[in-house]
Image 1 (cartoon, helix red, strand yellow):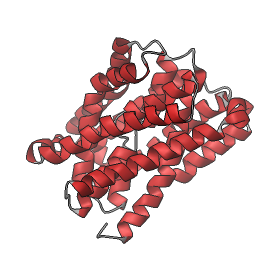
Image 2: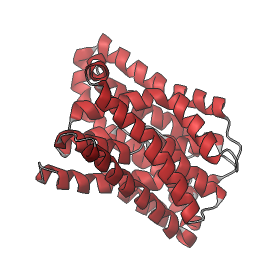
Image 3: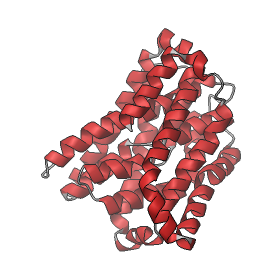
Image 4: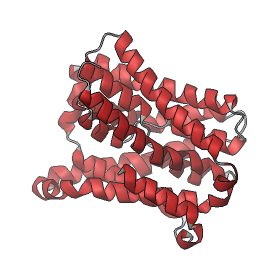
Length: 298
């Protein structure tokens, strides 16, 4: 997935005119496809962890919606980003955990059940928390329509997941056969979102995109590190520390790009941080999974 998304980003950057036929309006449907796939992989039993281990899930979700938004705001101010890029970075920071975090946690030999539980709960909380956090972090400089963002997340994220859960419950055997193809489908959808966003802003990225790449990388690395540190300070066992680290550091960056396209059309560059995050966190996720899996005591 990391290789595919990176290749998509490079091609979009070098040959933006080739991909100009792809319109930003298809970003939301593509994200809906990804979320529908997530719903197909979930079971209602996955949410039982919330009741059996509420402390762990609450720690993870609290870290998710405090560390990443604060890091986004601090980095945007430290590097004096303009309004558009600040909105984009803050959007990434205020989004829930991404589905890729579950795969990376599995590869890292972390607590997969905890990772799935945190992703599910943070996603369910996102319609309320994401718009409010964006408004709190960026509402003084740009107009943030909290209700419109709330409705967007319901339609683009929550509804496809619910439909996916319903389809799995109605046709479990057919869904089980299709599950093997879902990672490939999600990877293609994410790669397409990256292509759309980067090709539309290729000239601006080539002119001065190194700063935002650095900010996105620092955002992700700091999130992974602080997430792990919190697990360590709370004396969590190794597999839980890994899950919290990965869940905090890896965001639903596709949602960030979609929200930027829908609600901040006057700031086209606001879509860029989400696209770059999609590329980078798959690379860093692969690296951290290898490091974690080789060291059971971490």
